Figure 1 (tube, rainbow, N blue to C red):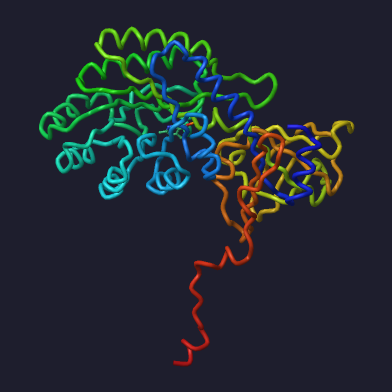
Figure 2: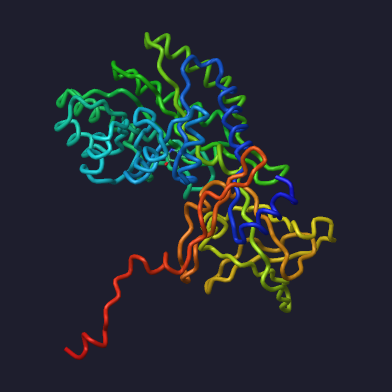
Length: 407
Ligand SMILES: *Cc1c(COP(=O)(O)O)cnc(C)c1O
């Protein structure tokens, strides 16, 4: 998005503020669909947890996407946004049987990731088709916090327990209609991913009534111009071909499902924040912005390196800055970064802030969560108001302690 547009959005709606560009979302959706164009049945389910504003969910639906949800509340958000239950899959981990039953009652596809839930759910509801989440024990990315397929991961049912899955299915006569894996973020090595896919194919052969195979997500997006990213075109060609040949062996055309979050929305997001103070210490120049990890925690949580541009002075000479927030805690967004010279009052723009940014925001330090704006067909539309003081206290129950003391 152009600096002038971003600046005028900040002027109109205030800062800090999140801005999402629908054109980029559409571009990514189309790119992934095209990469898998040789697959006869492809379904892309957007992972709601990346960015769960209902306008984003209904926009995804308008593109043809379904939804991947991880809590009953996300399921309800999806339904509220107008996405039909048949286009929603529920992939929680460690939830109660009641939560699974609630989702099933709403008509969404259930995906179960542990043996006890599978056995309990199958015994009570043998007629409800269920997908099984397996853990192929393949490390897709380098970061153990965001890679969820390794041996000690809490996610999925270990592939070594396949005999137990099969026994439960036989005993309960439940119907398994899908097999799922999600090896976590950052697929850099296509061959590693294809290896995990082979494990899924092998597993799938043990089930006769499948309708889909869900390969999860983990597409890596670039964070700066020379950054590495998942080559989805190469993946589409290789996995697409292999998938079709599997379907021939299986004797039925299955649906290939992906559930990207980051890939669809990361690059569509911009976070605008204003510089309150420029502070020079003995070794560092700090730019202190009107935000903190209460609004954007990924740099501190995952070490993610968001590009930061000074859109108030895009042609100024570059200097080195540490960009930090206003939270009473270390909240460093960037260390020793070259940025066009910053003056107090300048607007900084953080890139790649569509995924896992607003959705992880909190009220820490009793700060308000910021507004969100959709940039759609040349117009900026407010899709969430910034919080106000009343939002901080609306669920607090105020006791009159003076009265309690007296009585
Ligand atoms: C978080 C999640 C995704 C999305 O992952 P991205 O890296 O954002 O694409 C997909 N599937 C499941 C089950 C998830 O938990």
